[in-house]
Length: 288
Image (tube, rainbow, N blue to C red):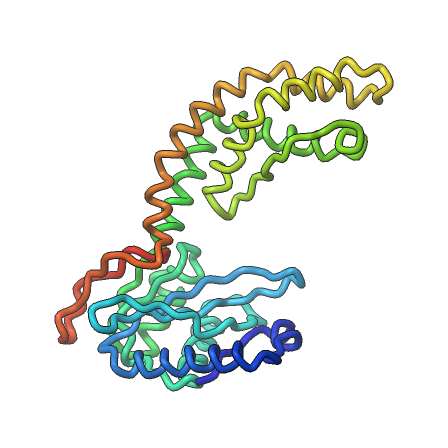
């Protein structure tokens, strides 16, 4: 069984440790044995760009072995094109190269992007057409949670202004003069790709409230600082009522942490099928 990696990864990947290489190939071999004994497979794929701005698609298989859910990464495909037809062919080709039959697919899980979820021309639809059978598509639960949180934070004016203020505050703390003259707090930068970033940003601001207030006071009163830096500090200090907003948002976002933990847990509950061709459920517990 072969696991493919992006070319740049492969160029730096060296199995120089006997223990690590033996362990790696033992795990890969055992995965292949388990899959061949499993009655069906769920395939899960998601893409992201690496530091070289190359799109990489992860390919994960999920199956049930002895009533226990198993999930394994079997490949990282470097994509030269981003259309649904190309992505679908790459996934099927990868499965075939590794000895997996697409006929064993009983479920597919991707994000909600149209190229993956499209009902007619998306990967999930093309996958069913090419394999020649119905393969249920599940929109990643954690991705749905992310979309809901981001939409909510963008729809509530006060929350939207809070995160705009957090961006300005983060940029201010990273100014060369400020970071080299004062002991700046460690703040998180807002990343839109994960809803948990909203929680982390809010928590870092709330936990460093007194440090942030004192920093803004010192900079705004510093006559040796540049005028624009003084002005920026004064403007941020006037919005200090956002700390109360942050405390409220921390409670709201914190309530979603258990759901996030469940969706990314290594173990969880799985709805299985009863050994026939009528697949009646979907997997829960791990992030999809």
